[in-house]
Amino acid sequence: MNQLKPLAIFLFFGMTLLSYSQKSKTKDGKDSNTSSYSKGIFYSLSDSKINTELNEIGVTFFRNKYIFLSNKKRRIIEATKGAPIKEPNNFMYVLNIDESGDLSFPLLFSQKLISENNQGSVGFSPDQKIIYFTKENAKDSNIYTLHKADFDEKNPDRWINLTELKVVPSAFSIETPCISPDGKKIYVASNIPGGYGGFDLYEAPILKDGSIGKLVNLGAKVNTSTDEKYPFLSSDNKHLYYSSKGHANLGGFDVFRSSYKNGEFSRAVNLGKSFNSESDEIAFAMGTKTTGYVTTNRKQKDNFDILKFEAKKQNNTQQTYTVVKEQSKAALPNVVVVVKNEFNKMVAVLKTDANGKIKFNLEPLSEYTIAINTAGYEAYNMQISLDDENIDFNLKKIK
Image 1 (cartoon, rainbow, N blue to C red):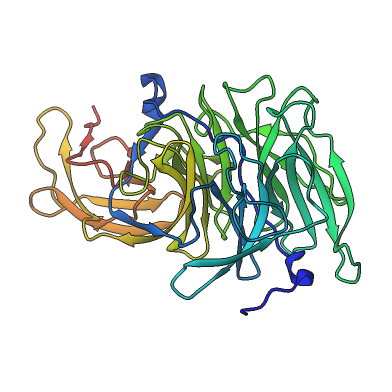
Image 2 (spheres, rainbow, N blue to C red):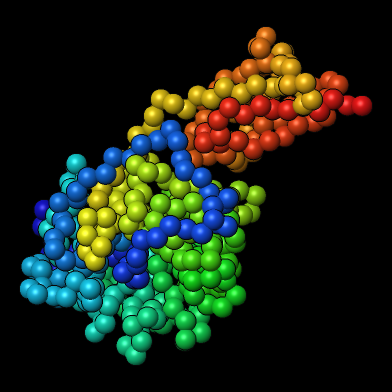
């Protein structure tokens, strides 16, 4: 579709950010043990063809389009001349996506949702009939408030029933909303008291009337003493991607992934040095299982650009492990090893060779559980990932 009339513009929206003048810095050591750098996957990043000397901040997808925030002049395509980069006034725009992932033809998203202050990120219901959006508080630029609206194609305004949602106390901010693919939960960042420090990620149920239930902190495996923002749920609802200034970090905001299993999110895994940098990486959004967009200021600290990415699985996903006796370290041949993935699904049943070794391929960013039950030895269980190398499985002999 190469034409976008004003009627169509009202259909689009987005999902991501608001505090982006962050300085890069390394993380304190106490958070490092909750994260690891990924292996077995390489991210190819390239320009999205939409970046200018002003800020372009990605949001999310809608109806084969892409939404972004920018301090361009309202109602026109051209960038605002002489706009201060450090103090942008952001509004949402909608973009075409071509077959190569390049972005083009920015048009204002919605006249109805514009305010006199910065627009923030948005999320929407699976049927695309409800939008949850944030905007800057007119009295305090450090605070963003959450709102919702209904889509009515027959109404000239398109977005109707605009309502502020009182989810957090007025002295605190609620930002970067994301709706789960099943439409049952909303994920947000907030600096309300009782968290781990800075902005934490929270989840809350979306009630039948569209209101938001009680916020629940996602816990210490996701949140740190610094900031976590920009949640993005995978289409299967199994993985949470988000930006954090904590954990094992290269600097600034890095993008991490946590898996949802057994009713909670697992430890954060850094997407790695091919994706993250010493600067900020925010607003991660996947359009397919291997492609998407991320926003970064790696070229210039005070200027954010949108990059497209492609995830490429590497060939170094096979690992070798040895089953040994705990005391003597002697290898144990013909031992059965059961391998389950992070969602407790059996993926392999292996038997050690004459040297006590097994070999198998592991998926990047994922954790596995090793279970060994063999005669004469205590039951053995251990969690491993592709990042773990040269590990022995030490079996303790039954006395």
